Amino acid sequence: MKSDFWDTSALLALQCASDDFHAAAEAVFDGDCFAARRSRAEFYCAATGRMGVPPAVALQLLESLDEFVDWISLTDADEARVIKSAPKRGLQGRILFDALIAECAAKAGCKTVVTANPTHFRHVLPHTDIVDLTVQK
Image (tube, rainbow, N blue to C red):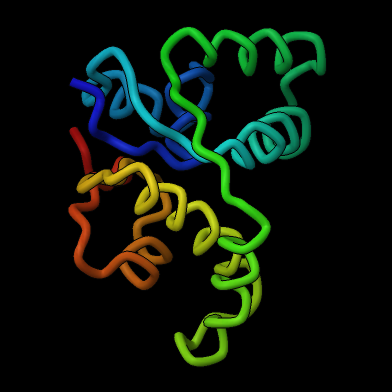
């Protein structure tokens, strides 16, 4: 049953064999998942940037995600609500992007988030189970 939400770091780990958490991602992947539509751009950016994946290969990896990911989008109102809540929630800097991704997890009704960035997700989704790829064996 599709119930897990995968953030960008987890999708990169799953798709890129050179990622430090690739084996952990493969071990917990159950065949399908939810993810934020905005993670598509982040995936391509990180793959072609810090990971050094050639652009054509990154695009191929990204497009193959469509086979098993149900992409969740935020409305303009959803995004505005998250941004307006940032000061009250103590969000500043890049964690805002994870808050927007986390909002997609909540919108999809997911109770579990798979990530290699657990600190941000524990902050923005404190009542959600976090599968931390950085500690998986």
